[in-house]
Image (tube, rainbow, N blue to C red):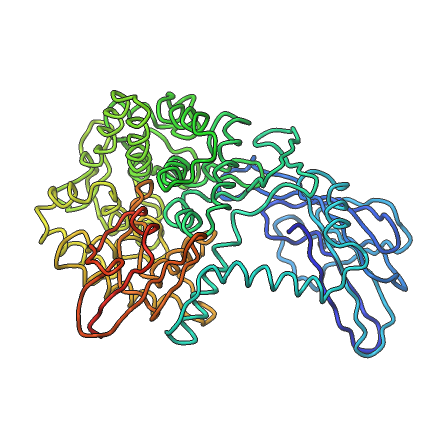
Length: 593
């Protein structure tokens, strides 16, 4: 969980192993490394500055061990040629300064450790690495605990393979092509990478937005890319890996206790504030409504209510909360807190989804007036609808629509007022909690369906942009149009999820795109965050068996010329509740293929 083992097989001659601390998947530079023995080093590397937050940095501590003493070893430093900061230079001009006789501590931006061996043909040298977000000592503790000196590479490999096979075997698929199976299980594997464990083997972890170190008896999770994952990944965890989802929710609630707010986009104990919205709210409420309730909901509700009601100037989660509460929308020019620009419409749309979910919980807890206010807010998307453009449209400070306005601007990720990383078309149908209302303002079912179909026909749909990834499922809200969902989902899977090197639609966004594929290939999708329902569509495989713990759920496809869905032998709708799904044992699609 916290360590890795690497095996190098060398030819005859000089074999070198380099630990390069100057390069890494981070915007930060700088590291320190210290020799502990002839075969061990420990150190720390600065990480972070993810996306738009230059302050969200954190230390990654490490311990590294080689399994045999080298013939020579030392530190090295990479030095750029002195041609001036802005000068063009070639890597061949650079100098590597070696420190073969210095065995204490070295720090710098581009430093490393080197080991040289006199190797025989096929000689194997193994390197073990442990990491910690607490201290160098804990990195070594993690390494020694998870990889005692007598554990072999083959044992670690076998254990890891078994653990992954057990995890992936929670869902068994039959039928389909080999490529489809590869895509499915690769996607399922991706969904299990993040969030990931933060605490060390002794339970210690860095507290949220604090210099404190805390301890837990359970699992503390980190890397909550919630603007992405609140749409589908956590729903997948709840369905297939409920014990992990509970730990994830507990982790989020504990974060609110440690720093006062639920996470938005948390990374190793730091809040990056990447993207917008209040995405922890629908995740926690969705989990609760699906029966996973063994967490501190009182604390969770207090944190949700705090972010929903606190004034913007004091609210890092909703910095534009004041006009949102007062007007039901956010005008242009009110807030642009990072270098992504003014994202007023995008911000508001995310708040609508969160407040719709929160309204249900407030009602359940007896706060009827607050629930009524939240439902009113969640309907505020109507302020943005422009009959002239036929889309949602940014609103100026004086209440008028932005003019001139091109609803296609932003489709190539160029900056556009009001929308974040997308065009108006990528956001206009993102009112998942009120599709009936959106249909009405568009003129009714026919106009809604035609306009939504236009998004796909004219290339306005972006399969890698979260706000519109559920668009194909919206057709199924209208009787007689469900075939469009099935057709589009099948086409999108075949086009964008393949075994080729570019077999993902852009960034996987910590499993979000892969979760879309997993759900879609199984034949169901959770298209309203915070609401325990699924839209059904034709599965890719002949049979999918999900281990629900107390019983298996079998989803099957029968090509018999019919066009119907049966749940435990009884006719079912194209939308079912989580409760109906969990209580069932068999979901069967009869299709005309």
